[in-house]
Length: 190
Image 1: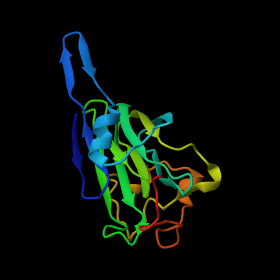
Image 2: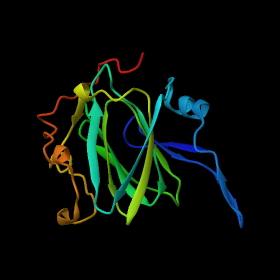
Image 3: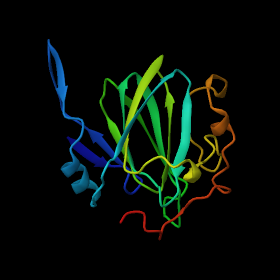
Image 4: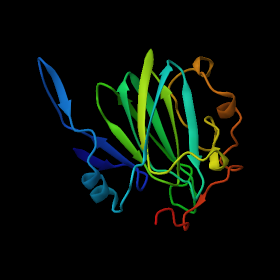
């Protein structure tokens, strides 16, 4: 598995090796030891989640506040998405910046999104099955978000706004300047 840093400290792109022949393929999709070596600390995933969505569905930008903040390891099993992580650690040199990566069932790429980042994705295929591991349980009272089209972040989602399918929750998220965010000095891992 190849693990590469992105322009945002802590956000990593994982590219597993795929071994295939006329029978199909095999791929090792997760290795805790390799991920921990790359990120420099221990992460214990405790829950796996999966969603299926149709073209134009945008989910995000979501995160949870401490003590229920979450790291995520995300991948697409079928279809393709534009996956986005936004640095929401006030005081960070990359605060408000984002990375976007195309994840697909075909390319098998994964993105590790650490605590202190908002996360979202847009389905760019007819449908997509999206899977992710988290290292903390869902806690609705700590659930927060940032508006997907906040102009200070300036995410290029790559499709016409009229094609987006959003939940009521995601349409009504605050801008980054109004959102409850992390402080770069906060201890996010024990």
